[in-house]
Length: 302
Image 1 (spheres, one colour):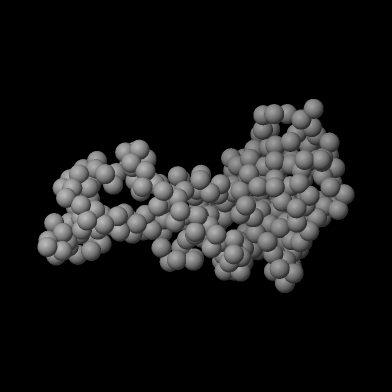
Image 2 (cartoon, rainbow, N blue to C red):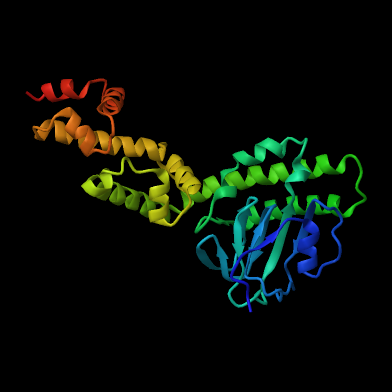
């Protein structure tokens, strides 16, 4: 019977033990071939205290974040320490291929990636945000993994870590490039997200009960769309050149202008109505966006 509570994995050795693999060649990094792998551990979800990069083919019922995948081409997923990975519903499918690269954070100490790895936002992506690779992109990634494997299985020396880190950093840079491509090529899905953002934003500003809680946050939209805050921010930046906060402020100024030009509400009343606790904050934002104070804007209509 599968465990309901996620199983925590803190070491490379423990991964090999659970997968019934030979001892790892290095205590802080490992590459596992998924072809022929059996999942009979009784564990249906795990939390890794490691970085996990995976390439899977022939996915059937794979869960990544909150989204189920049924995809036969190259599918990449990235997990940072502390994230949950759920397994396939019916065990590992027969046709599953690919690999998983496990990197303990200690392996990155005193290297160029120790701080840089945190800037790759896709490690915080979830839900329907895995990376779908073209055939050419898959070849690029697999060639880099071959280079890492060559070092991993050779006799380790003082150069090994630097060489592996160099290949890993190149892999992460390519992944970033391919994600940017995905934002562009998956236009229908992405523009549906933009439409949904606009609908949620309009409904929020039309709902006085919601506005009493203050301005909406990125997390509010991400939860409503069932995607991660990081992915939503990256998507909006790529498609619109704006952050979620900038989009919220645009909508807010639009509603403020409507109230200033069509009602007799005072500036303070409008500020409170739009979710501001202090009218001064509203005045400051309005002036920074329009180069006019709310009163000057209103007077221009009289």
